[in-house]
Image (tube, rainbow, N blue to C red; front, side, top):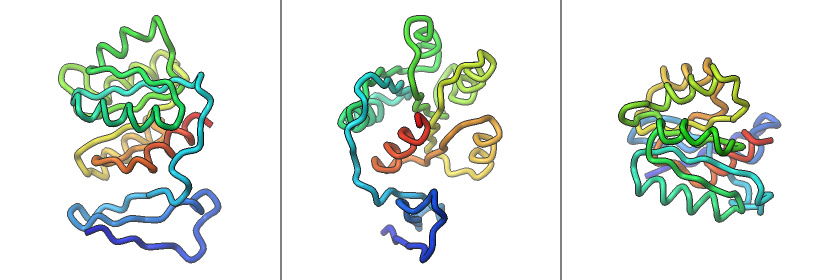
Length: 160
């Protein structure tokens, strides 16, 4: 069961969001109350990097449904090799992947001075990881399972 809690006077930047508490993990999650999808400029490219093929397919469908172009990658290494050919406007990146994990991919992007905004996702509900993400310049850190509206809002915010 998920309970929704609305703030009486939310800060300006959070007016279209409410806090959803997942009792299983006792973690607050921001969820969008805005319309789920406004068509986006089709030239914007979002890279989805996740080793789980079912998650990649689902994320790709949701992101494409809002008008983004999407390239999906099954590993961090595959994504990093692709950067010579294309530069995404946003990277949706899983933290826990074999070989090169999300932290290493994000670190590589930072060292390369890439301007790719990063939205990270993890199945682990760890406040330390959230703090690490913010320290490393990650725009948004989302817990899996990811709310589609929240993901799309995070992508739009990261690209803006």
